[in-house]
Image (cartoon, rainbow, N blue to C red; front, side):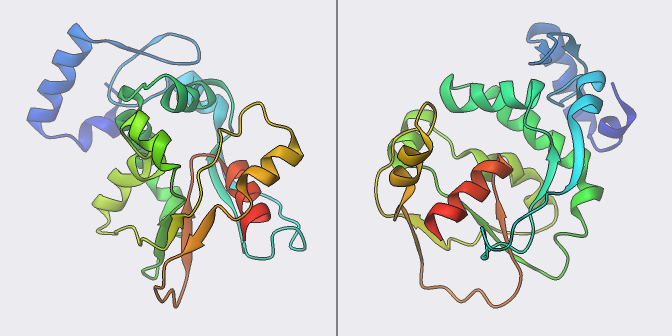
Length: 209
């Protein structure tokens, strides 16, 4: 078991992981190698997709965003796992993706200083009910809990939307137009919007802000 994970686990958690590893082994969604510990990816696939840093933004295109930061490229096991969460009800990926966030919490620490407001883009209610979970809050939940942060309910869905997958650019814009609204809360300070895909976040802000 990787030392980074082991140091953070209690004896009960270690025992639980050993039992799960024996009876319910987890395999990397990219290469299908067995993964030791609670993470999502094997070490090789983690290294190949881990790409922390800020993305380049055209301010005239997304004036409401100051910056976009990512941990992983949307490819390989990360892409496969998110597809499983969205379309295959792979709830087992949630905790493991949360562990991937914790694995690199040192990268996120500078972003979350100063008690920022943390907001998530809400999923369409029908899809949330079908899945049984909300993806971004579940993925970032362990990190937020560890650092005593809570989500601010500042956004809500005011119309149902179709899945974006398979739609043309014009259809995507029409689908999202007017779909979000703000709750009347005072966001005086830094606001961090968490999302499973940076591109989706940028597109939503371009079409809805």
